[in-house]
Image 1: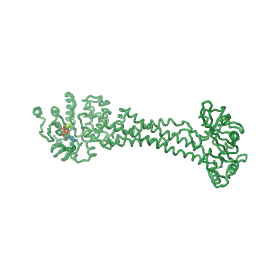
Image 2: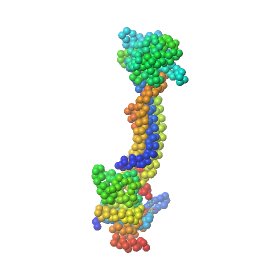
Image 3: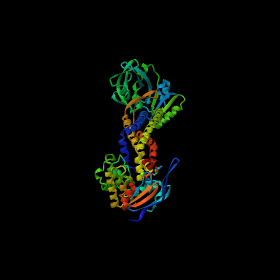
Image 4: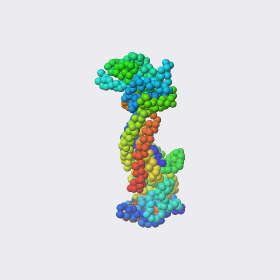
Length: 241
Length: 382
Ligand SMILES: Nc1ncnc2c1ncn2[C@@H]1O[C@H](COP(=O)(O)OP(=O)(O)O)[C@@H](O)[C@H]1O
Ligand SMILES: [Mg+2]
């Protein structure tokens, strides 16, 4: 495995709602190598999404640092980090979050509009990733005309289209049945293997987590156990117990 | 940039709301255009009516012909003004005129109509050179005949050969004249002595119009008469006289703008409301775009553009309806007279309507677009 590119140093996040403080992250130290596929598991409310958002540059930590590819993204201002995100991170959401009025093609094209590219270049890239997720026959469909699994494949295509170094997926199979979930996970695994993308997958589902090379467990804002992928079966037992 | 297709697709998806909101803009813009076209039409009539070489004189203190009365002595002195051109017969090109508004009851419809009659001598056609008899012929001296301006003829559906009742008698309509769209087209012209005799106004004149060689000569004649103590007249070049009449429309124009602004407030509230509702339904879209890396300013512009799109749809419809009035003829009171005019929609009016549309759109769209800009993606996604 290659060099680490993501460094998380002593990350704290405190949310304040009125007078109530919620300590969502309480000192996270964590690294990811380039091209690594990591899953993040843990009970609801343990801080998984918070950590993912901080790594993806969507939010600012209360303290601590996130360094990706040599850049301290936790220090960037909003506009800078927004442009950094558009170039380096692909997002996959639990509820797909496609734009309802745009076609599958246009949804995938959307992130490319932030770059200086000719229409022809964009077209080529969009068609390539839609081919990759086997949706070449659904270009002009609106999200409402697609099944959940198809929508999530469009979501993955949209995450891939800018060729980002990091893909973050927050419970991407949380809204899908087992069979469709497996298809989506197969796809993510294929993306990881063939495109050598760095993937951070947040999930509840041990089967989903098992697709990753490394599983990270969270509890009450702290990392509890790290498990190598080889020990999946043991892990499963532990969790089921 | 957020693609414009995102905006127009959303407008199409909720097309009923879009159209209803655009209708507000349509009404404002159409009303604005119609009001301005009215003013423009009346001003055009005034601009066409005056000839810069002509000087119009009326009794002092009478701003309008309808109030002016001058006697023979005064009129002769006026005609002696230096600089007045002379005809082939050697007489000055000075047209004595008697202007009267005659209210006449139509026996069939039982309604009162007003006929504006102008009594004159043949020299009148040499002074008012823009007048052309286009149908029939000129009235004859000492006959009970009239020629009608095309404006009155059209308004009352009177043709050559018809009878026109004025006073106790019927007059023969022997011709129709045009005068380049001027106020004269709203008048009935006839022989001075016939008109004066019939209405017992012998020896009384409303105005004398003098023909000079050039605008500069006209100006000199105006100065001469102003400084001449022996004649107590109000004197103006004909262009200035009609320009003064036209200024009455300034109030109308200001009124048109005020009315439009008040209507616009309604339309602006409408579009603001629509856009707030639309944005409320699309916070998730906004959150996604922000997460993908679109900047706040790009979101602001996108929603502002969407509002402008609604505004432009409404504005375009309004221009279409407003333009439909172009050329429609009506009569309106101007000073003491009734003047036939045609609504005139021209490029400046359309430009004003366009600017009005855009300003309304921006004002109506700004607050909602700013609220869209302030959407916090993570909160919106939770
Ligand atoms: N914006 C927020 N404001 C207040 N509390 C929050 C916010 N986001 C998350 N939290 C709280 O922080 C904790 C961690 O949340 P989250 O990271 O979403 O957990 P997970 O994704 O593991 O379910 C929870 O207690 C949650 O209620
Ligand atoms: Mg979560």
